[in-house]
Amino acid sequence: MDNKTIAPLPETSEDEQPPFKPLSAEEARKLREQYPPVSPWWVVGGQAVVGLVAACVAWAVTGKPGVGWSAGYGALAVVIPAAVFARGLTGRFSTLNAGTAAVGFLLWEMVKIALTVAMMMAAPRLVRELSWPALLVGLVLAMKVYWVALAFAPRKRRPH
Image (cartoon, rainbow, N blue to C red):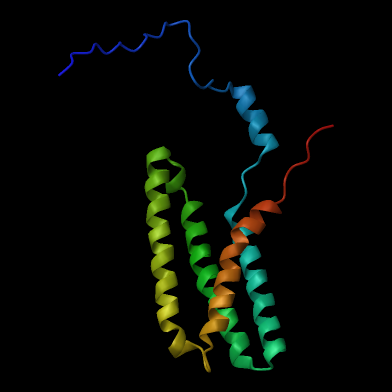
């Protein structure tokens, strides 16, 4: 076996810049003004609108009310859990500190998933003439609203 010497890592001096620069209070304020946070309620509202449109289109295209109700219920299986999630995230406990915010996010995400699964399991008992393909289309369309709602969320205008 060769005994090769491994070169030590170079030490960093105190005058070197860190890999990131913390923002000053003024810089952080300007950044928040330029990119305001998007309300989760904006997303929930977008999901509800897309779900309603999907249900109406499904009913109109097929002429079968059961298909429309199925698509609408699929969207509701996203909208209702998302509204519960948004309510949980905007509560006072989620803003106490970073730790409670992270735990709250995970907790409410689990509640959202469980509620969605429960609604899907209840669908055959709640929707007359259930059409699983229509239900899944409504569900997927409502889920995809996250990205569209974020792209079209209201933003403050930049000063000229």
